[in-house]
Each structure stands twice: as C-alpha cells, then as structure tokens.
Image 1 (cartoon, rainbow, N blue to C red):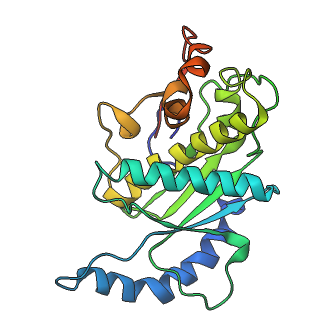
Image 2 (tube, rainbow, N blue to C red; image 1 turned 90 degrees about the horizontal axis):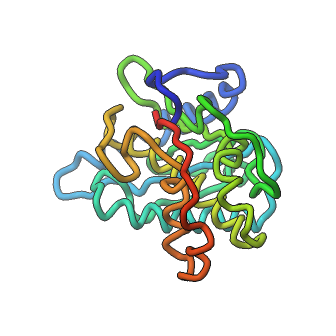
Length: 233
C-alpha cells in the first residue's frame, strides 16, 4: 500500500536479517507444505504471520493488533477465498530455532506502532506498506510503516480515548497487512474497484473496521470530516 509506482524493493540492508532468517525457515518447512497443499482432497496449510517490530511494543499493543488482524482476516476471507480466515499469529521474537511454521508470511513493522497521542503531519505521497516482486514472484514478506499510518489517521482519531485510539491504530495496521497479503495470496498486483483491494485508500478505508464497532453517538462525532486519500500498492 503506497503511492503510485508498483512493487518496489526498499531498505534492502535493513530487511536482510529478517529475509535471510525466514528464507531458511521457508526452504526447510514450506516444501512439505506445498506438496501437502497440492495433494488431492487435502486443504492448504494454515497461514502463519510472523510479526517483527523494530521498536518495542507493549503486550497490550500486541494483543490489540493480533485481535484486529484476526477479526479483519475472518471478515475479508468471506469474499476472498485465497485468504485463511483464521491465520496463526506469532511475534517474531517468540519463534525458536527448529520451530515448524506452516505457510509463513513475515511482517516487519517499522517506526512507531503505538496509537498517536496528538495530530501528526499528513504523509503526502509516502508509502504505508509494500511487498516485493522477485523474478516474477511476490515474496511472502510485508513491510508496514506504522509512523506513516499514525500520521494518516491521527486527525480523525484525536477525539478518542486511549483505548479507542489503540484499537483504531491496530485496525489500520491490520488492513495494510491484509491489503498486501491479498497480493501475496493471489500472486497479483491488480486491484478491485472497491473494498480492501481497491487501488486508492482513504482514512475511512483504514478505519472502516473500527468505525463498524463504534456506537452511533461516537460515529456522529466524526460525521462530515473530509477523508485524505493515499493510493495503495
């Protein structure tokens, strides 16, 4: 999810430790998974997200992110069959050597993933998240720039209490991850005309899952506010 320009490799040096570590895991464990998925009458293996954050996150922030990612995945998988409706979620630091991981997708959260405490400058023209295409294949690695996500939604959630801000931030990050997951699962850089796969996202798109849980009185407080736009990748 980014400004126009398609799939791009970024910050290769910063990403290499994660990529190399999980490339080894994928080579060791995913070959049996692929064979399993292709065997007649058997279902595909469960997707496992292995999530790293380059800054410390509180346990409550991890719990909120994983709860929103599960909820969003269950919702989106109803209409996109390529997605697992109940993915396994792991913190990268909890993975131990030799651990079997089925169908892994590695996510790196960059920057500050805590809910913004104040309004931040809008990140005009800046990417929110991206995946990489290598030799015609979209790799199972997702990067999300949390700082830019926070900048984008900060004005819209400034009136919320801390609990609501945390849920809104977690939901926005989850939707960026899901948008990129769809590219990986479908091995396609195409976009739909609406929904989480559409080419152009606004603040309401990032916060739509959170808004669905708001009471009507809370929702009315945000009525009439213009939505900034940013184009996903």
